[in-house]
Amino acid sequence: MMIEVQRQTEHRGSDDLLTAGLGLEGLRAMTPPAFADPAAPTAAELRRRSVWNSWRGIADLSATGGYGELYGSVAAVPGREFSAFATLPGARQPHRVMLQVPDDFDLDKRCVVVTASSGSRGVDGSIAVAGAWGLPRGCAVAYTDKGAGTDYFDLDSGTGVLLDGTRGDPDAGYPLAFLPQAGGAASGVAFKHAHSGDNPEADWGLHVRQAAEFALTALERAFPQAAPFTFDNTRVIAVGLSNGGGAVLRAASDPEPWLDAVVAAEPNVYFDGPGARTLYDYATEAGLLMPCALLHLPIDTLPQPPLRAQSEPLWTARCATLRAAGLVQGDTPAAQAQSAHAQLKAGGWSDEALVAGVLSVGFDLWRAVAVTYASAYAGTGVGAHPCGFGFSAQEADFSPRAARADERASWFSDGTGIAPGAGVGIIDPAMAPPDFTLPGLLCLRGLLDLPADSDFARGLAATRADLPRAGLPVVVIHGLGDGLVPAAFSSAPYVAAAQAAGREVRYWQVRNAQHFDAFLALPAYGSRYVPMLPYVYAALDQVQAHLDGQAALPANAVLEAAARGAGPLQTGQLALPR
Image 1: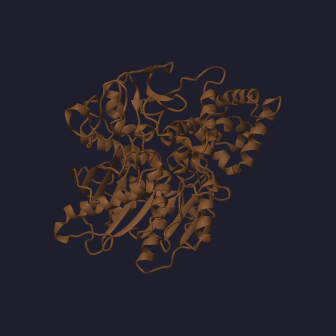
Image 2: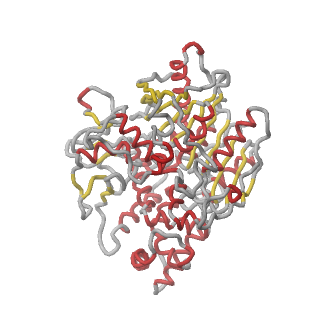
Image 3: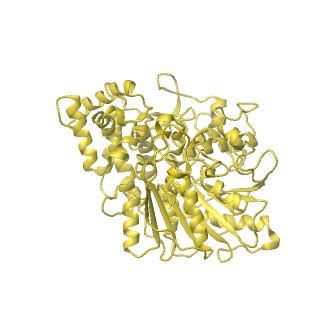
């Protein structure tokens, strides 16, 4: 199915494809690019700010982190962007697809890098992953938000997001990226990942394929003299990180040979085998138990933030409420923490994952993930969350309020696709003292006990991955200290099953690496961990060489990366495979 281009823009001079003209210095700036009118930014302003946020949400751009010097590229890449809304058969809502075509696209060696955003990010959320590698090499880069993204619909003003990122009224006749089904009395904010009713994760692989199909259509528009562009005459390499890594692995299972190779980093992938667990399972477990369990770890093992002195009273209170609920044993905080820690270890959590998991506890990320995904799996719309959660702008006391025009205008560029963030918070009707978030977390965890024929259980089961197509080169990369998507629950079972079945899957395990490169700008994280992006780029280089017939597929490897300490990153610390 060919998806027609709906918007085309030129990006040259002071507004290139890769950094929107910001360059490394602009991307490193601590404040985002400003809007001339905060309540009505232009499409160009929104794009620039979205690119700034997308880079900073994925890459370590700190002066000591080595980006643009030891690895990666932020060189200006002139070219064109082609955008559209694409809709899967039977889906209620579209997903965004976009193709970036550099001016030096090589018509004699046609190459498309297709990617899906990490987390629930917007369509350009993987620009630091795929764009930074593909565009400087003359490849076109195709993106999809995989049915999530930052196209928030404001129920109070009745406005959504147009294709160019500006806000619009559905009654004006222009298509919106997301138009939820909601009653007239609905208020607050609707997110596509949570409220589309489509359970996008079940179709991640199809989103990736549609993005690749859109790329072929857009390339024919860009170079009509060189048509046709087909999967037979155009190399397609898929790459993704986190949820994007899970998406490209889902695409890898397509039996049709449209993909030439796949690189998946720290993928959120669930393959039903020994040790495997769904993200929802271990996220709800961590949301409940990890705040208490962290008290069992020696104080000097945990990076900051969160600040231990500020967090310890909250963690101690969680131990007490878990004890009252019968979920941990012991009559003292120390004994309760030991009980919680033992449960996590029994569930497969490594010490390294628990240490890095402190970040997700500090940012309330476990609850944020569970709230959004519960709604998606259950297929519920606005106001029908299985545990009653919603999203809204909030007063200082966390009560809901209507969003201001300037807040609505920046959601597209500043949001991450889940709450809290960009001025939108989680509304939890079950919040109550003494442990305000515990009742809601218990409800979220309890959804796993619903019968197998419930909407939630069916939705969760639909996210199971299949093995990659036989003969398809796949490289999976995972940090052994990943505390958000632990390798033991995701990559390790998937790779074991794929290799046992004779698939062409290689596995790089990286010591002293965790999930979030962006947080390596914080000294306590940068001194402990190496970034993951250098390994993604290295895998893409080796896969490209393999496809060119210049090298064999890389071997399985445990890469003995060394923490950089207080100084700047050195190439030798990465232990990159050669």
